[in-house]
Length: 138
Image 1 (cartoon, one colour):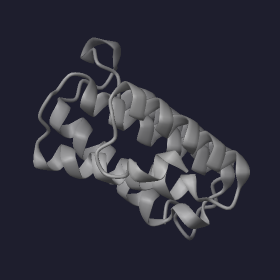
Image 2 (cartoon, rainbow, N blue to C red):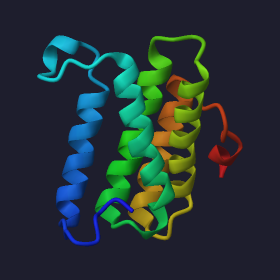
Image 3 (cartoon, helix red, strand yellow):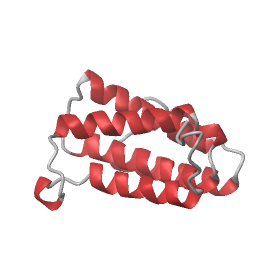
Image 4 (cartoon, helix red, strand yellow):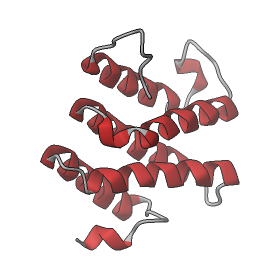
């Protein structure tokens, strides 16, 4: 899960942390960040955060789900914006991001569904989605 059992973190705080992580991990210029990490370290952190979000997406609070959708969209844009061919690790990260978007498109909550469908359609038009493009027409 995203939270430790002994420590209770408010959902709004987790959503804010996800936003900060998304901004930091998709920042292109290393000089803008106080922590100068190479792209391999950022990819590793981003993959792990996305994996944890995908694993527990169905039980998350709506605020956290919306930030998870936004983080997944940012990850796809970051991966596909500058590169024509993706490595295996980046393909896996892209697949996890698209999985989060697919889960959100069929979520119980209308706000999450609408945001996911909007971001999926925008991504499909801008950079293209690799794994789940058939459900975009629904």
